[in-house]
Image (cartoon, helix red, strand yellow):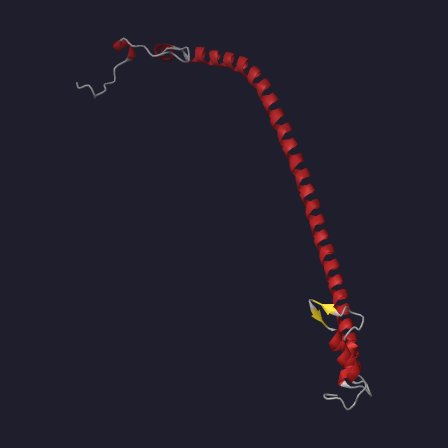
Length: 172
């Protein structure tokens, strides 16, 4: 027989004994009568379940309590999430409501200003008994500083004032 071949040799024949984890040897289980085995199991069943049932009840109670706690936390989280979503929707709706209201007000104001500007423009160009120079002088603020940006504007104002009201002036 080679080193790698394994032969079924009983442990007692090799001199090496395996630990008996169950507390019962192989020979003992085969030689016992069925009545002895059932009595021993019944004794073990009576002692083990009392310990296991108390541990099992405690574990079962703990698991039930833990599951109930988790369920209540999940429910609270869902309610908080729902409230947060409702608040977010409300804030978004309020934002767009305010935005649209301000936008409409802005559009009305711009429209009103545009109409006012066009009306003034039409009045400005349709003035009777005025020359181009009269209208140009109206656009210039006479109270402004005469010197602006190192440029003397006083001579220009004097020229416009001399041309004012002269229908025979060039470009009138």
